[in-house]
Length: 279
Image 1 (cartoon, rainbow, N blue to C red):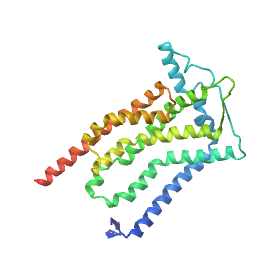
Image 2: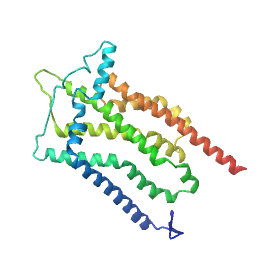
Image 3: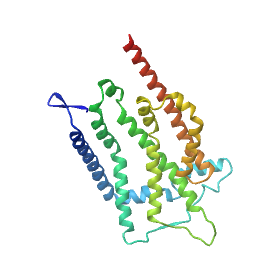
């Protein structure tokens, strides 16, 4: 069992003590999410009109940039438009209120993510050695930065690409696109949260390397398989057109290469420590 400091002394904690400690960390994390979700709930106009429905409008920054790029290469049909040809509707009595609640909770979780990590770290860190704690300094900051970069990538890249493709796709001129509110918000939520979690890949590789599950050799050996997995993953979170999949795949592959570099750094550090101990 891990030891925790209490009144200047260290004492062994029982399994039930650990559960009690974990419970309070979860309670504080949940409370932070609820408080920030309440703020998001009150900021309804900004959350929905600006953030959620922003990618639905032709003046969204991503569409403007892609339109300029398309014009530069002589292909402007896909991203140069004045209006997306679909409407959003709510077909259930509680549809809008339910969307308001769950969107607020999602916003609360995203904003509270660093604090949730902090509570997780406070629970785990007492069970680590002093050297392990020092080597993990900056974990919360780096993990939070990667998460927020992923969220921004999901919002400004994955979401507009998906909305543009799915919102303009038609099997026949006889069928009009009137999307349900819950369907639209689910797409935005999944794109943003999934991208945020995917960008935690370097942190995951760091932890797996520390515990000896993966090595740089393994990561290099299965690089080809990872390419296939990335393409499949890109196909899942983006519309099924080649351009969108490439745009999403490149950052993920870059993260994989960064993860190999991180794994090498961890292994080198462990080898140096072993040499020092051997002396």
